[in-house]
Length: 313
Length: 139
Image 1 (tube, rainbow over the protein chains, first blue to last red):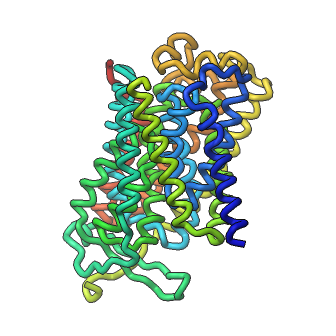
Image 2: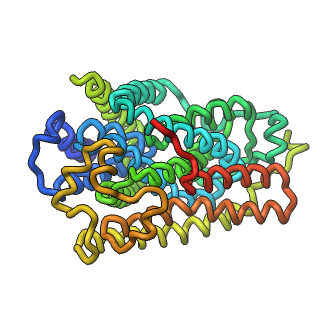
Image 3: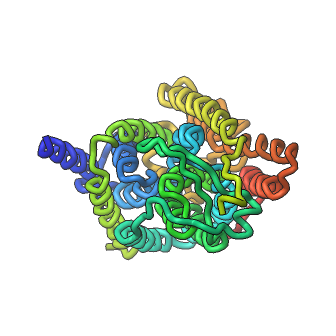
């Protein structure tokens, strides 16, 4: 049974990587019909959706480095699509997470305000750098992705951090809440601390979201859980929900600049949403750590490839 | 801490969830219908589908120069084109949070929760500013 599951995972991962591996470095040379690349994109985003949910990360962080490295699309359109992928996934997940009180509106609002303000600056910075030389974006994306790999490898979430004292900002904004832990049926009451430090973290999250079109969920969880002390379930759910606020400002900028190509954006959004639905159903049956390690491997590969592309290798 | 702090979730949270749920479904429906109109050729596009691979690898400025694709809110007046009509669904999805925040703003205003009124107002300002296409940069 275990071997069977493992086989399925390896097979899925092979399918996931196959277009990228086979077509690496030669997208422009392939003479595919107009529907060829959008179709490959649809299946790739579908698998990103499946694996992204199972690994507990948003789709944008996988999509942007893979699509810029292995597809023929210009990085400007990939980043625009990446933002809408992150936005679409977040909007799809938000109602359930809010209704269950796992995502907190009171926690998301101040953090998203900081992140979305800097996402605007990031979006303009990204478009400006790309106009100067796309290699600047490609190279810094590679470095960022490799940095994310290290954060994912070494940051350990804390299940239920003990926060005994909120600070002034926490009390002013009434950042606290209650949710029911389904495994035990117990009510968990929580609040946060280190709010100012956390907000500084969201400055970086916003900039990265705007510059690269990344959802930055990987960073949100670390800040909310490790820095501010929100329970890990609240941190994951609030991060997922807050992306819909953060990314909508940057998404509008990319759309206004004409960087949203429906032929790329629509198959990607539909693919990732379908994939995320399947992924969330498979989630109870798989070992998240195995998937997480696979995704880290793919990210590392995509990050190195992105860096190589920037140097014309 | 528990003695001085009343733990509660924002009562507006459930309303927010319902708005997101309905607007997200509406946005996806409009997006898929618009894309179907584009792919089936029921609405002719600016760029024929078979020529699109010639343009998607171009930098944004060159792409805009060669195709005359709409920027800012121009797309509203070009909804009769197949490759523009899917943007309507994209715009609905990008507007979900703006609508939610408008509702939140008035709810917090009514309840007189000043810090949250300020946060929603500032967030709305930035969201509307980025949607308005009023901020520009030169290369």
